[in-house]
Length: 415
Image (cartoon, rainbow, N blue to C red):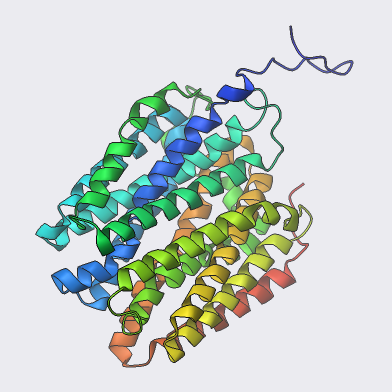
């Protein structure tokens, strides 16, 4: 029996799944495991420096290789999932996660395998995050989950990303500091945990309109990416989301290597966990900060990120590891607030046929911030200036972007 609808309105379909078997739960687990693949490498940067004697610029360059896999995956996977369906593209993302961890397990053989693994990890996270966020929104509404509110999809996707990233970093960091086979075991554990989801993801319901006429080239065009609200609010705040994480727990442990000598890997793991747990805890609050008629959520997130960068500078200058923990917590809160608000802005702007594509563009721009440690390290090495100088310049740029958001605070709202 169909649900009762007002007179003159078509009856709503019955829910397709019982409350205990909502299909978004499977997708949440898949996004959790793929996010784990992307962040398990971060605490190991110091390990590669100590054991394989890579320079600071080299280990931060490994983070940059990750972006090379991310951006094409973001830009292509959404259009591919619109054309061929969410399931097969997400299956490819899970397969790439297993391949990435397998390659990184052989990272001791040299930089080539590390780069291959990091590139595949970028493909994994780019595919799973872009397609998964759009799919999560579709599975977090009628008829798959009638009890969900309009922001549930964005919050669930962001929470899966944050928790998976946190666990990946914690498992890898603890094994690297105190466990056996630190350059192999973290990746083998992840591959074993992730492999079953290659089968489970194919059992989730398809939500894309597969078979709708249209060339792939046409699907790669995302008209909503030209919306003024997107270009003047979402794109301005986007790169800061992952610049906060990359600097807060990727670059800072390297800057504090002398202050944490002997337990640097554990400290890097702690910073990662603090930042991502902070990001997870703030997301329910971010839902209330965000509003559909202003840029309050994205502005609040960016200001928290700038404050976190200020604490990073203080921690570096004073060589204070407690200040580093505070910096990671504040930057993580900014990251969670900015990501949830950015995704909600995207979902308000995008038409249904543009959702996966516009989500991909948003993430592609956001993840460009992940290359910031590599750029900062290269500038510091090339110019001989202190890292704090470059970080202050980045914080100043963040303040400038906050002013742009303030100017466009209530402008160009989608109808």
